Length: 165
Image (tube, rainbow, N blue to C red):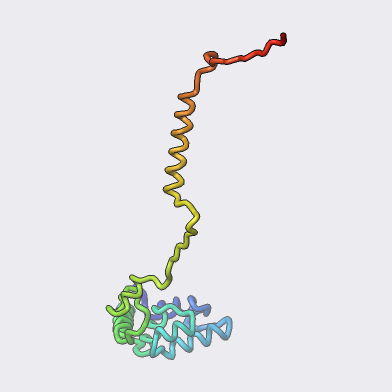
């Protein structure tokens, strides 16, 4: 079971502070300012997270500990989670909802495209189906011509010769 002191130690170490025998040595000003902001408490957790790269659990735990330093760690975490869930439910509903549906009056915009496809054909062009039919007819004619052609070696040759007298 984690004690509140160990929890605060982990919180400080996570944000770049060195924790040693109840003495906090901030290695830089940013970490120091960050801890001050966390321990001052955040009235709006989501807004604070936008300003600082802080995970929600850290803010909740630090805030609740600052409000009640004698609280048990497990109770602290449960209380913080409960408070966060309540806050999320209390927030306005105008935020992006990816599961949202359009109002009934707006759905027709999805069904009807906002562009037209216009196909222009020139009158002298032969449609593709007709071209295909002509190709098939021509190939049939060629096959018939090949079949009707006399076989080689059986050609009848008429030779007319004029004799000089």
